[in-house]
Image (tube, rainbow, N blue to C red):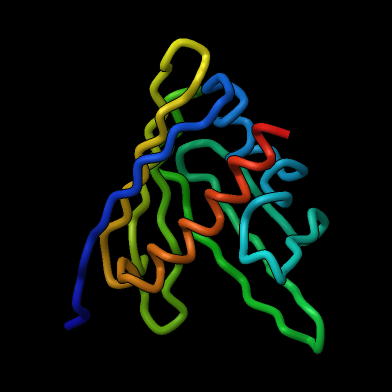
Length: 142
């Protein structure tokens, strides 16, 4: 049986929550922050069908042929305040983890609470998301 874990990340973004939510569901915006800095996320290789039961799929690419695909299914989509989605597990029939993103208005800024639980919820995953959210903050403030 796979081990499961969980963690939570809370970030404050200097942007309205509608803009933060849009950065999660609009491919051109998502491509600018999702992934480590050394990767790209080609929009033409991305699916963000942000509705309950819709799929998401993002392929990250880098030099020398590096390529990795992340995917899953949206479970809840409540604009502009909540997303719940799975992440795929290439070695098993079910999701490796479930992610919940909650966005709260803070006077024109947005408090994002991000939670991941499941087999992929580990320190390495948390560190990766922290870098992604640094990039998201740069996108929203720029």
